[in-house]
Image 1: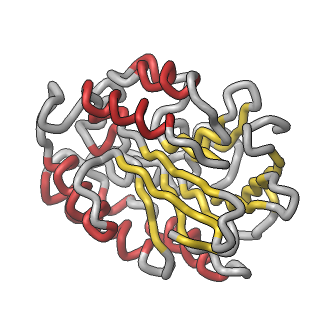
Image 2 (image 1 turned 135 degrees about the vertical axis):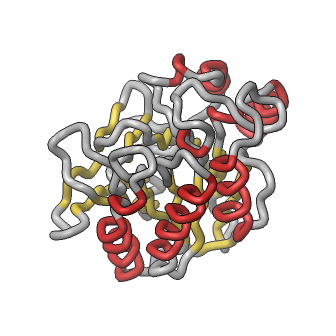
Length: 270
């Protein structure tokens, strides 16, 4: 992707409170979030989302809940780059799906691939998207990992992708640093720590926070039941004329600022 500006949104976890609770899907919340992002000026070219789009036990529940999510998402005309969450495997944080995973090819996993990655022509739950300035003054890569579909091939891929030089590096992973050891992909953090990083974008915990010591933003407030006093909302990320990056998180109903911080390309300054 070539762009005159580096500007994108972040959308967090969106699922009902209980397994199989399709009737309790947070449709109104996630619809309003995508409508808010669509209404932003200047336009937001793309969003990244941090995983957990369902809480489903059967294939029919999976299809119904993903349909609700995608209907809401279609209120936004830009591109979505989704990450795989544990609920897109079996629901367990430690679950590991895919052809080499112990949990295999669940309906949650295969439906996520076809419904959410199909529109962006990705066939694996881990992938990289690159953005290049129209005047070639900066480059950015978005490395989307899949903790709940981890194998040695993904580990090698992640090492290779992070080694490619870019001005900005954004890693999207469902589980944050406080939960990654509960998954098969704890190795991913070692790989990330060995390479340049602007921002680690995660979800899993249904709250909002950011941590300067891990260069990490936790965005889990896309409709899943909250685990803190933070309201639902979304984040916008903008590159400034100075080359710094400002991240602002908004309440989805009032558009009040929940938090804002500015970092350098190396992730310093939060």
